[in-house]
Image (cartoon, rainbow, N blue to C red; front, top):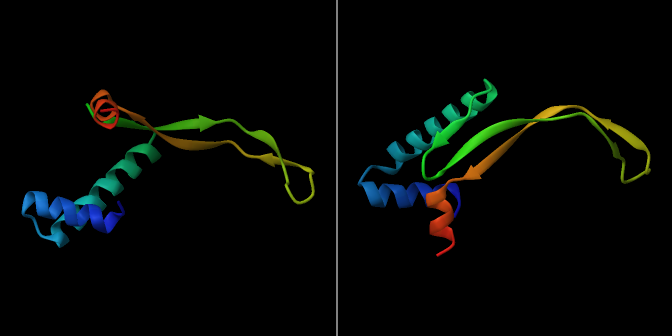
Length: 91
């Protein structure tokens, strides 16, 4: 399912217009991104948790030359599925 298909499905389920659903989904994306960028988690009980986790700097390899390359530290976004989502997927 892509983003437009999700918008269409939510609009059909709720009776909202596609435009209203699109605005709502964009707001959700913005708020999750903002929370993660500020070091917070987004917990949706039964669905899952979005987290930004630190990844330390490391030494990698350039595939073209085989030489070592320093990869800087960064944050990685992770999603941990909640119990309800896990159960629904594993029916």
